[in-house]
Amino acid sequence: MTELNGSCLCGEVKFEIIGKLESFYLCHCGWCQKDTGSAHSANLFFSKAHIRWITGKERVTNYQLPETEHYKSFCSICGSALPNLQMNGKVVVVPAGCIRDVPIEPTAHIFISKRANWDNGLEKIKMYDKVPE
Image (cartoon, rainbow, N blue to C red; front, side):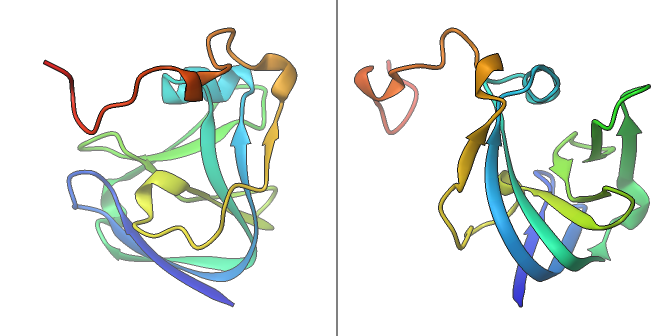
């Protein structure tokens, strides 16, 4: 069993996940690109798990894209992505960025055929510790 704690950006929502951590996927589907405003989402997938909202449960907003299985939860104050139940409650999906220390490396890229055209060879470009002057 894995136990992880996390929070949203503003700190109003805090949670604990207890369960079996199965995988860590970087999803390149078009929905995740739109959802994150980036090249992909980064999500931890748990089976046999539950979410315990420590604070701010009333601040959690849920959204499902109509006529799809794309589902997200987020803080109604800061907009940070938050954990949610998917596949009729069989899987808990946790955005990796809301966890301080993710215990595993990414398992795989998924929906790679939908990968953003600018999301290749990024290790070749300049890297900075902060915004360059």
